[in-house]
Amino acid sequence: MADFGVNLNDVDAANSNASGGGGPIIPRGRYGFQIVEGEIKQNSKKNGDNYAFKAECTDEGPFFKSFVYGTIVLSNPSAWAQNNGHAQLQALGMAMGFAKGEFTNTDMALYQPFVADLDIETYKKDGQDKERNVFTAYIHEGNAHTEPPSEKAPATAPSIDNNAAQTNAANSNQPDPLTARQTQNGSALSTGGGAAGGRAMPWKRSA
Image (tube, rainbow, N blue to C red; front, side, top):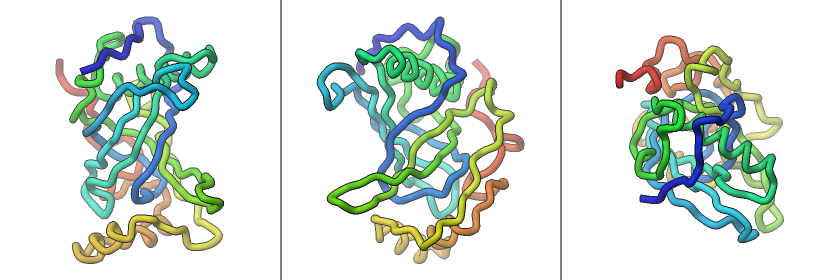
């Protein structure tokens, strides 16, 4: 277990953006997750610490158990980056149902259900364009009224690096991930894409 070393009691959780990515591409939308791995790591510039985690999709459907990686800034010379990271951490804890200031270490996050919005970003690797998922919001009582992101039809069929995900989806008679990406419109789906209303929200759990 590692303490975050962050006092979240006075954090404004209005900003709940986060960055990260990796694994099979999940369509833009709102999904249930749980963190299965997490650690505090020094950033690449060696001037601050990040909370890096691996989250597993818990919604039934073609993306069940697909992974999305997230990174939250804990300390950084940039006041903006650090404050933004603290807001993200506070929002993640609230999405899991923790009271303000109660979310203090990496072990508390493990296997705690939460709901989050996903987007897709493009990045360069070895001179080629790649795609990855990023968390754009952790859904809690303060932002549950917002609409989830909707899928924007790509100009060309996107590439998915993990061919095994497509094979597994086909073998389980689930929709192909490419088809799901092209048809999702942000409405409530069995995969979890859709508005918060009508689904059991983790932050509503009893104390």
